[in-house]
Image 1 (cartoon, rainbow, N blue to C red):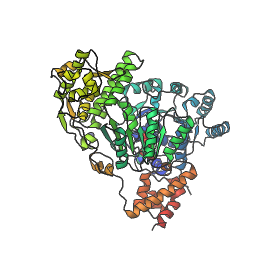
Image 2 (tube, rainbow, N blue to C red):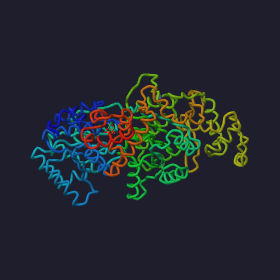
Image 3 (tube, helix red, strand yellow):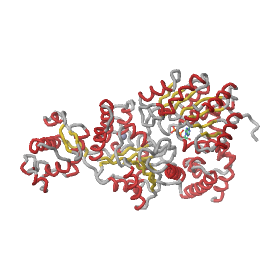
Image 4 (cartoon, protein in one colour):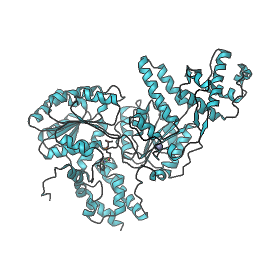
Length: 627
Ligand code: ADP
Ligand code: ZN
């Protein structure tokens, strides 16, 4: 049937194999660079389309007789699915990692040496194993080593939190296989990590491609925590019923409690943290990838390489350590480019905890200072009254015009009301000062608020605090407002919280506030988010937000459901996640257009030649049954 030679033009390959019509962003340039034999360093946000940057060159070079591409990835759990996706698209691929038994590994090695294989995924420790290097040597001698792709390249840097010892060894590929193009890819953008990658992987000659790190389809929302659980539940019920998503918590205990509680509330939630045994973790991850609409409640142990494209929300019940962490975690939402939410509840206790964790760590002073600086940047984001996206981008060195409004964050969509809290801040600070003056010790936020509001308690009486000049000077503000003031003062570093009892103490900069040299503006605490059910798509028309999902009328919706059911069967049969067979977006387009011929079906984005051949008749039958 295929009398024509297979295309070797990158664009034709994109079309024929992946069923897409155009390259995105820097893809075309990167691909050109690698095909022509050069090295590349690719910095692209999650969901930007990094995989095609090495997959297309691998296919093109294999078709040109240049052998196999070796893809280094630390994500053993995902190799099976990645290889499955390629095989579905008609590209011969395999993986080598510790999940294979000896016979399985030998079979892959035979394929590798046979020349048939287009791509081999391998764990880093495999690649640098002498036995494997010997095989690569032999391929290299025969001109059958087409390229190296090093995915998640930031793992080579101790700077980030994903450091892998084995990645350091990968530097040897540069000399040993000089002339074989190497492409390193990561979604971690900061300059320090980048420099580490260049140096340790010896990519001094590589062309660097830096994409914008903006994720326009992600809506950022940071709410003030009063009852985190209740707020989370409201968010899940109102906006993400039946959606897949991740809820991040700081501790293992909280992960388990939250998952249990969500289940009791009728949601489908699973826990994931490093304390669960490996087998259970694998099962939970697998279910999250394969089933629809699961909520994963997890610590940061869950995440790297979760390339499930239809994660519709990432929620934080606790404050992450810094903006890098926040951005990486929230970045797992909406890889498919459709509308997704990054939601976080944040409160006084979060600020106190994070500050204390740094204080109490055994790290050196310089490291601590660095951590404090990073936390401060995240706190400024959480407290900010202006566009969240602008702040995020600025943090990663991307400037936007002054007054920029993204139209797809809480502050842009529902500009917060502000109030001048300068006077209130001064009252709080002088009350803290009085405590020390009067009792020689400090007190926590709860007691401070009682005193400010003039609330008589056992403690205020016993300590004689009702006689303080500051007793009752802040009766006009609610407890919530006071918590906001204190949180902000800690976030801004005018107050520190110390010791086992979270005692509040003034810092050097408090004096400036007391003297009235600094004004403090706070947002007026908001009532539950002013959104309605299905609010997720409402703002989607604003600014540069995600394209709204294709609207389906009743008939089309019925076709979509039928196609999803069919896809589910295929996925089960092939032991692959459903989105690898076809994405939701592809099925939705099929449902909307209801193609009645193979050639019409071929026009749907995401339908390549192999899938058309394998599934076309079936899809036409499913659609035809509903006609
Ligand atoms: P990353 O690894 O950068 O997070 P992926 O490579 O997983 O991103 O790509 C994200 C999604 O975008 C995938 O579903 C992929 O098929 C899709 N995609 C990538 N490039 C294109 C393109 N040029 N046209 C259409 N879809 C694309
Ligand atoms: Zn905004």
